[in-house]
Amino acid sequence: MYVQRETDLGPGTYYRSGRISTVNGQHFFSTREGTLEGPYFTRLDAEREIQRYILRQRQAQGLLESRNF
Picture 1 (tube, helix red, strand yellow):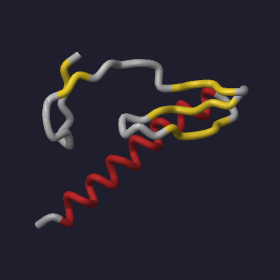
Picture 2 (cartoon, one colour):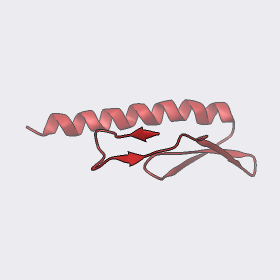
Picture 3 (cartoon, rainbow, N blue to C red):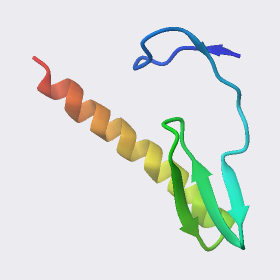
Picture 4 (cartoon, rainbow, N blue to C red):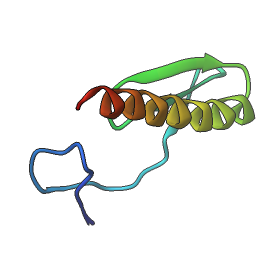
């Protein structure tokens, strides 16, 4: 799959995969930035946190863009 995000310096190929992992009964999710977020008690908690993580990243990007005049 060929995808380029606004923040990417050049074109790249990214493959979709499951973002949620379970280790010793605890759930984690991985990010495009290469971090592993968690642990969460349930898969549902991890899925909710993915949405919150995306919202925080978008808000942070919006703040950065608003400060660049």
